[in-house]
Length: 265
Image (cartoon, rainbow, N blue to C red; front, top):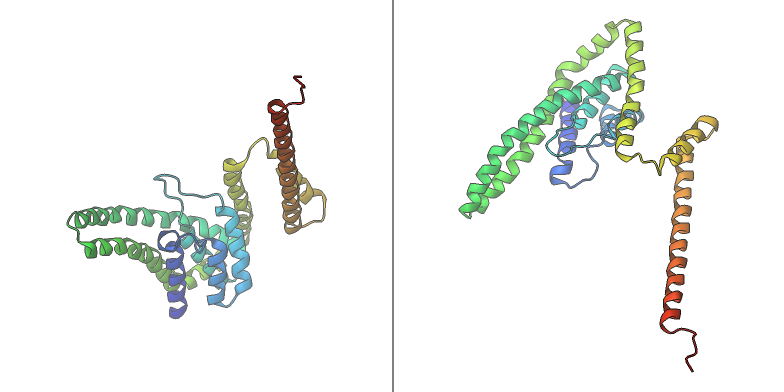
């Protein structure tokens, strides 16, 4: 268990550093961390399924300005790990991951506050042309971010896995069933957040077209998405052809006006 806890802590640490020193490789997304957690705990299929469910919840979450979103890395790793270790499935992961992410958010805010000190120190080293000091100040914040998720993840797996399993087993079936229903509703919140940013009147017809296709046909989501991609390509081709024809007509009109077909003789 200690080795698994260390590996899960490293997965969380790599995820939190994704958008900080690795660029944006999507390593922090629940679908990726779920796969890695399942790989470590010996249940890849369950890890991917749980990661996909958590992705539906958090796909619309983004850090805007100074606002700090819930820590999807810690929530995703621990939620998936506890669900696999307890054997209760994706419903329990949905219930556990959200409060864990919200609690870990506070720790992320604390790390950001501490990092402001090193930012000012880097400014002072830069005024002195002390490049070694600037480099050191640049590396300390990522290390703190790594530790801010590694330590809680490691301790939670070491100290909390068996307790969480016992707690879940002790919960009455009626309460656990209600939590599962609530967990199934959480992906709707994720879609609502995403639609709040992307939804427009011009694109509404395509949303309802997909909704009707999913409701009244036997097609799965993948097939509907492929049909949607084909429709998008067709619309793109039609629009380009129309723009090309319009541009050609304007060019001919311009040529007629400049060169003209009027005989002045």
